[in-house]
Each structure stands twice: as structure tokens, then as C-alpha cells.
Image (cartoon, rainbow over all chains, first blue to last red; front, side):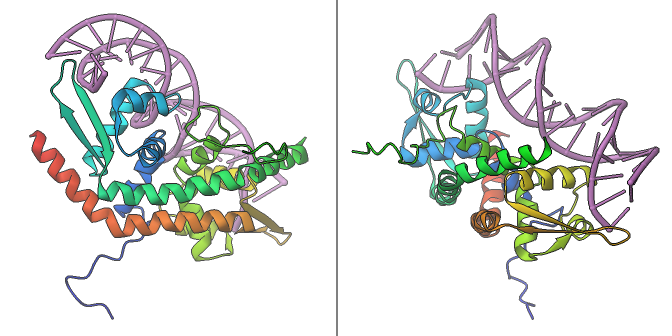
Length: 128
Length: 128
DNA sequence: CCGTATCCAATGGGATACTG
DNA sequence: CAGTATCCCATTGGATACGG
């Protein structure tokens, strides 16, 4: 079988200790997918533009989300020393790949939200 | 343009009040993707099998996650009146579609977790 | 403009015990 | 076996104020 010592580890997200759970964890954070989506729709955005586009996000959470994405190598941050300072965010190549998969989720959500809502209504009605 | 009154609403997940946010919310819950993944790998599973496969999940959270998925029409639950009772879970057609998109996320995670980890190390080193 | 810091309310989710 | 019911703590994230 696979005895090549340089082979990639056999990841298994169902294993509690698999590091790929960190990726799901990041995606699961409230604002991650939305920020990635915004930067997919409009590839270069300043902090304040991002804040306006991502409905409901607070300054604190936007900063926190962007730092986390930057740390994971998914977003790059460019500072221009104007007065006051200008900061631009964009997805890295890696981030764009994630963006593509987030698009898949978004597309599924757009296509099926009504079916989900109907299912909820039916489920709740059956309980009443 | 689109003036058909029967046309689908123009969803926009970046809008704070868009119902599609509920889908992202559900996906973001800690165990949702993992349960869907388990049921994608093995289409029919009993409660206790599911519990063994999804590493780290507690009884409470598995029940809660399954109920939520059932309510959304993503999972179906079948009870056999044996003693003790036997319960089988499987993805609905809608759930299988979601499962396919979750696979995309999982595949991305498997392919890129190492790059993410390297990025973190580099980011943290630059701060020290 | 782009953050950081602090405080605090809400929620998520784990541990445990009990039931049909 | 497959849940339900509590208790309770840790984390998330919102509001607000301040700083470079």
C-alpha cells in the first residue's frame, strides 16, 4: 500500500484530532464566509468598504476575522501611509481557492433556501 | 430586466436580513458538516454508529444536530419498533446536494491544511 | 481611517444523570 | 439503543470608548 514516507498524511476530518478540523472551525466562524464572499465579488476592498458590504459586521469582528484570515494565508493586507492611513484587503491565491468553494455553498443556499424554509414549516406544523 | 412577479427573490447573503444567512448559520454549527460528511461516506447509519464515527461528538450535540438537520429537510429519520428501538438516519435528496458541497470544502481542507499551517507559523514568527 | 481595549450579555456546547 | 433533562462553564461576539 502506501509506504512512501513523503506521502501526504491521510487526513480524516471525522477524527477528533485531525488538523483539518481547524479549517472547518475557521469556516464556521460567524463572519468568515461573508468576508471571503465580499472579497470574491470585489477583489480589492478597504476596511471601511468591507464593513459596509458585510451587513451587520462590527468593527471588532471585522478586524478579528481579517486577522485570522491573514494569519491563515488567505487574505493579504496592504497599508498605504497616507493620512489618514489607507488599508487594502484582497484574497491570496489560496484564499481565492477557498473563495471558490464558498461560492459553491452560497450557490446551494440561494438555490435551496426556500425548500429549507418549507421543510421547517412542515416540521414545526407536525409538532404543533 | 426581471419583472416577472413569480421570479425567485434576488438573494444576497451579504444582506443582514437575507434568509440565506440561516443556511450559513446551520453550516457553521460545530457538528453539522461532520454529520453530513459521515452520512455521505456511509449513507445509512444508526445513532450509535454515527456517534462512533463523528469523533468527539456528545450524545446531546449529536441529537441536537440531527434534529436541526431533520427540521431543515436534510436528514430523514426512520424508527424501527424493535426492542430496544432501532433508528436509522440518512440524507434526503436535498441533504445529498448539501453533502456534495460539503465534500468540496472537505477536499479543499485536505489539499491545503499544510499550507494554512505554514502560513500560521510564518505569521506568528513575524510577530515574535 | 483603521484599528485596539474593555466590559459584558448571550449562546454554545460539555458533563452528568435519568427514561421509554 | 436512543434519546431527554439539567446544570454550568467557556467562548463568541456585540457595544462602547479610546488611540495612532
